Image (cartoon, rainbow, N blue to C red; front, side, top):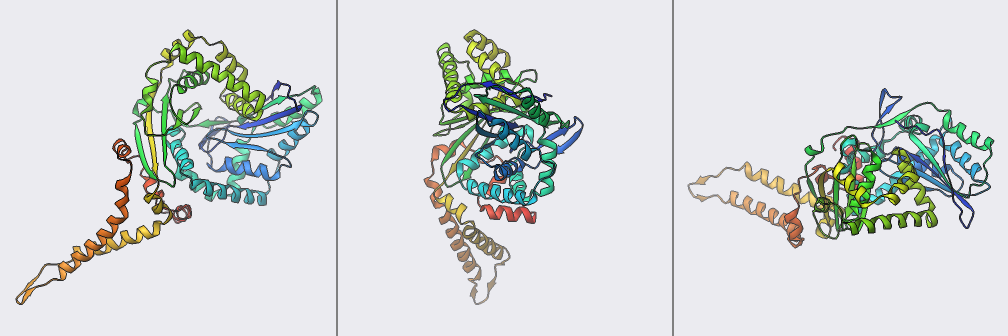
Amino acid sequence: MKTYYDIEYNYHEYSDEKVYITLGFNIGVATKYFYINNKNAYTNNLAFANVFANYVRLLFEGELALNVDRTVTSISIGADKNTWTTKLMALFHIIFADSLDEKVFEDAHKLSLTRFEKAYKQGEFRAVYKAYEYADTNKGYKLHTLIEDIQNISFSDFLAARNNLVIPSNMCVYVNGCIGSVSDEERETINDWIVKNKVTAAMGGRIVDQRLKEDAHLLELSRQNVNMDILSLGFEENVSELDKMIYMVIEADKISGEGKTLHVDRFDSSIIVTTSEVLKLQNYLKRPATQQQFDMTREGLLGKYNQWLEGNPIRFNMMAVELKLNGTNIVDYIGTIANLTYQNYEEIAKKIRPIVSEAQIVMRRDSMAEFLLKPNDFQKQVDSFKTTTETVTALKYTLEKDGVSLQSLDKYVECITAMNDLIAEFGQFAAMDVNSLQQIKAKWMNTDSNLATKTFAEIFTDTKMGNS
C-alpha cells in the first residue's frame, strides 16, 4: 500500500501568478469497503464523500472546486502566490479538526440530499450511476445502497468515516503554480499536518474472474432518451495501473461516442460511453490501433494535457491526484505517453490484452415518462385489474332451470374493460424504436424495474419502511 506523507509540488508560471492546490482522497460514491491499519474491516457509507465535500464547502471561506467521483474525491482551491500556504493551512484546519460541527453536518446532509434528488430526475445521471453497478462490481457498489445511505447517514457515521478515511495514508496533495520560495519552516508546518496521523486505510473489494462476468442489458424509463455502453475490462493481477491506463486511453480513442469516461483502480477498470444509438462497442477492442490511430491519439492526449496545464490547472491537478492515488506520478505518466512508440504500444496490447464484458443501458421517455411522473395513477389501474381478476377467479358457472346466469359474463366484461384500460396505458410502447428493443433484453438488475416507476420520495419511503 502506498502512503503519501509528502506534498507534490510543480512549479509552473501562470500570468495571474496563482497557485492551484488540490487535495485528493481515496473515497467516492463506489468506495464501500476498507481495511484500517491493515487488519480491521470497515464498511463506508456511500454518501459520505458527498456529504464531506459539502461540509468543507460550508466551512471554508473562499471558492472551492469539488469533485466526487467513484473512488476519488478532490477539493481544489486557487490562491495568490504569497498567501497559498495560509489558505492550505485553513483547509487543513477544517479537514483535520479535532471535533466536527454536528449542525454543519446536518446542513451538508440536507444540501447533498437535495442536490442528489434533483440530479436523480435526469435520465443521464441515473444511467451513469446505474452503470457503476456493472463497471464497479468488485467494489460492491449498488445504486439502491447509495440511495439508502444518502438518506440515512448519521453524524456518528460521518464522524467515523472522517476519522478512518480522511487521513494521510488515504490522500495526497498536489500544488501547482507560481510557488516561489517556500521556507523550510512553512514546509515543515504543512508536512506536520500530514504526518501526525498514523492511521492507515486501504480500499477493499474482491477480484472475480472476468470470464464469469456476463454481458448485460437494461431497459429503463426516463425523462430523456439515453444510450449508454459500459465496457468492463479484466486485467491480470500483475498488470500495473500505469499500464492499464496507457492501454485504455489509446484503445478508448478508437471508440465512437459522444462522451467517454475511463476509470482504473485495483479492483475495476472500465470505459463508459454515451452513444447516439445502441451499439456493441467491444468489437472496437478486438484489434490493436493502427500506426495512424496511435500517432493521432498520442498527440491528441499530449495536446489535451498541455491545454489543461495552461488553461485549466484545476482539471490538471485532479488528474494528478487521481494518478497519485493509483500509485503513479503524473510526470511519469505524461512522460511515458510522450516517449511511447507504436512498437511499445503493440507489445503492451499483446501482453496485457484484457477480457472484456459489455453492458448497455437504454432509457426512453414519452409515455414511459408519464409513468415516472405519475406512478400512482398507473398503479391504481393495475390494482383495479388485479381485484377484478381475483373476483372472476372465485366465480362458479351455474346453469339454472329457467335460463343461463349472465353474472359470470358480466364479470368478464368488467375484467375486459379493465384490461383495455391497462392496455391503453401501454399502447404507446409500440411506437418505441423497434430496433433498440430487438437488441435489448430487459433482464439486468431487476431492482430498477421497481425504482423506475417510483418518485424519489417514494423510494426513500420504501427504504425507510423496509420495502426496498
